[in-house]
Image (cartoon, rainbow, N blue to C red; front, side, top):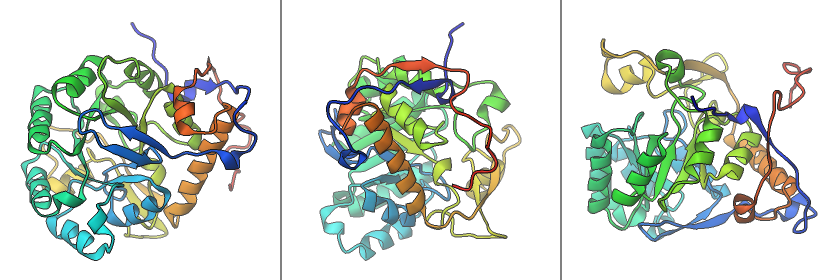
Length: 346
């Protein structure tokens, strides 16, 4: 039996600094050259998940100001995409912080192809998203999409197996492999199925893979410190869902001071997008009402501030230096003092 750890099980030991004496000097933006498409990605290596209430065009407009990416929900319509590009006065240069997405559902693929037929010159990233990417059908889908869109960045997942990560990167032409099953805040897969993989160990093991595919850690982050741990463990990118929930740029529906947030394998998501929760399946997602958190900008600034401090504690002035540093990880019983939890207003 393997031992595996989550973000709550570890801390990063602070290190001496020869590069930085102020958090103000920390640069979180970096450049990644994608291994297959050969496109240089620039910006803060964070992605908003393509979930209902998260992966919206309004969220994209807010996050791109911080050089952060957004994966638009695969249930966005052609009309919504068309309207986005027609209204965006800067679309002639392309929208580098935006990704279109699709799954194995034929309808989502149909929409993706329709949008790409019209707006391909303005889209650089395609995210192929399924709950369990450990399927030959999904690998075939990735290969098909690479052949059809040879000059686009392809992100695909989710996986937990290192051999499968290598396969998608080496044999299917995937630039960025998305890893993580069961660790999301609105996910109940571990409870309903007993399956999953603790995210900290998963990221660390995936970082030792053989292929050149970049790694995106998806799920398990509850605080800025968790992002810092994911990057230190070897993630090239981190995807956020729950940490961005409850904001006005995501879910516009407001009821009794709260905004709905639910997992994409929940009964609510199945009924909303497929019309029914099939009798042979069980819900693997929570349905929550998040107290209104206002603009996402406040949350993003808190996350970025935490990351700058993490880099400073590690003695690094750039994200690229931080990701390549030799960090000392500590296994702990408690990551922080919990005496006043529940009383904190900040």
